[in-house]
Image (tube, rainbow, N blue to C red; front, side, top):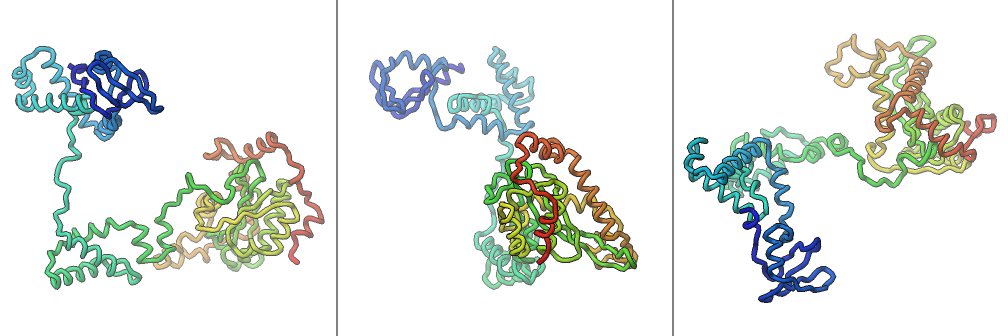
Length: 451
């Protein structure tokens, strides 16, 4: 029955998969078919031979619906597949010789239902070559999905939300709904309930809604931050250790005090240098001063002192300190280059993510961190981090130095090994690269001094 149902009468223009080649039926004669392949070479095939192969399944029609069976099976859920299997077993009982009325009665269903299943099976067998998919109940396609709202009402809802909800005043949704009811009454358009009106507001993209009501900075948090598959104009990782070093600044979320008199000195700034290939932090500097070329010089000193190398290139953002004559002169004198990543912070996800690790794994666990200030109106006097601050700049420097060493020796999920091992492995595999070596001596110290 299955072989017979596959047999389809060929017509001009049909594409047939015959002997592993897809050919088009270009001519039909009483005794043979003329098949033409993609190279425009034609060959005559005896009619009986091709029809026998079509009936046996050796040859088959090449249709555009070859993926339809897979798509139907992919969309079907476990419940639907279970029902299709049950229906197939019932049809198999009938094919095995049992009377239809007895089978229907034993399964407590009507004969008409069994006939419908058999018709759906045969139809899918003829059209798709697989009758099983015809037995899958299309539960997800049931129901009326056509909107019953008046088109004028839908247009008025969208217009009202655009004008009276998505604006800088950030009005409540009830305000826009009141204006909508007034416009419906004035224009004699059918109104909807607040629940239906709210459903239209919920469909608005979150980033678009926040951007219109709170600005670009607030909307930035709701935008996609993935750089996966995106080609960057700068090098993210480099080809070997100390090939590309990312550097940036962040203000740490902790209040510090003076080591001399215990007075509060505020929050410090961290300047970090991160090797892109090994993810190893190769240098850092902590200052109270805002980011400047002095922060960069101190961090570069520590980087050269700990590694003995000067990177082939730096990846920096658009900060003014990275455009300093002194920083550019130092980089140029060592034969290195500067790659600028102009754009949003997430495009520098490598070092920005590391700043997040420093904050969550170290700073937020120290006394005097500024987490309570995120909700200032709910912060009591005794929870003020300025009153509980005990860390000094020197002690925080030591703690951060220990943390970076522990981070370098711990396994990194993106590498499958520790950054320190990746760094040393690259040095052994790719060579020491003496051209990038720099001695930490008086000349280098003077070169990194402020003018």
